[in-house]
Length: 161
Image (cartoon, rainbow, N blue to C red; front, side, top):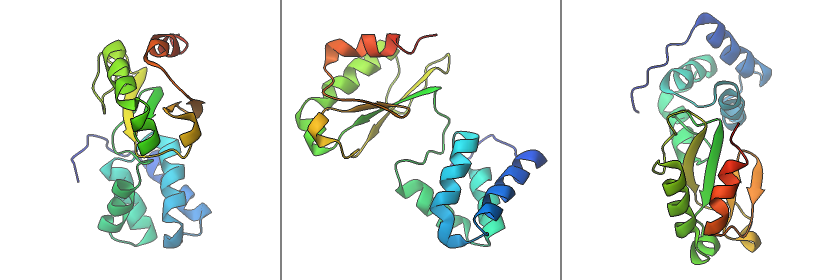
């Protein structure tokens, strides 16, 4: 597990405890608890994972295993507009790699990076299950289908404040 710099405050620990309590501190609800915690904090750094592990009385290794297995969870902060590009077979065959390259060029960041202003982050996903719309780009909850490289700049512009 990587070292992070977040130091939890008492109010943040209370939030984590409340989330766990809302699921009756049931370790079987770990994915739901992590999902809600990520919604609250924006990401799941080591300290948040440890607090959940302590509250549910399960090992940190189990929590980390779930967080690192599912691509939805992240241990690093994301931009306000998290861009995810599907790299599943259908998307890849239909040019997703070129879409990734264009986003990297337009944003000036690599996959896994966040723009200096914190507005955008860029990641790839294994499959989003929208193969008929390949290649697919997700920005937050919004799905862009059949994306072509010439559309990338316009998509980014629509999110600038």
